[in-house]
Image 1 (cartoon, rainbow, N blue to C red):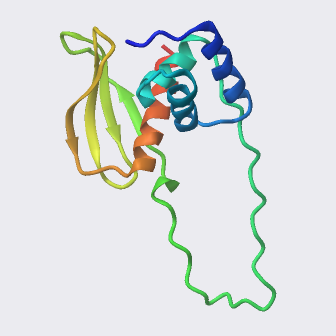
Image 2 (cartoon, helix red, strand yellow; image 1 turned 120 degrees about the horizontal axis):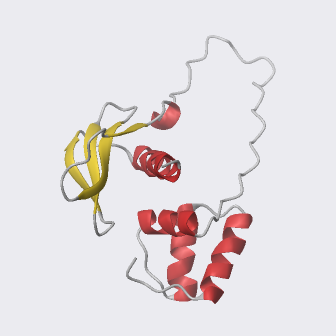
Length: 149
């Protein structure tokens, strides 16, 4: 990361995460309240590096169908993120990379990614256009996969 995070800002990040603020929200608050611009992935790595976990939001109770509603009503479209993003690591890392792998998105897109020796993320190949939700799912899956290394 090119930006320096003060202890005061890091404490704010801990409070935001404990309050359940998502990565996007933390990223925006870092910029507006601390004057620090980080990419989404850099924010995720910041949390990992400092052992900060985002508190889980309580799941909403499913809504019951209204009385007298017909079971013949058309089914609602499922969100693209209904499926799970599949992220894998390469057995042999490419020269010049710290880590590399592949990703399959639920919407049909797939790609090959890498993180170089400077810690910069890049795509070697990306086929199709994943949705923003799928990309966020990829970032979360990749972060979890890397945290287990």
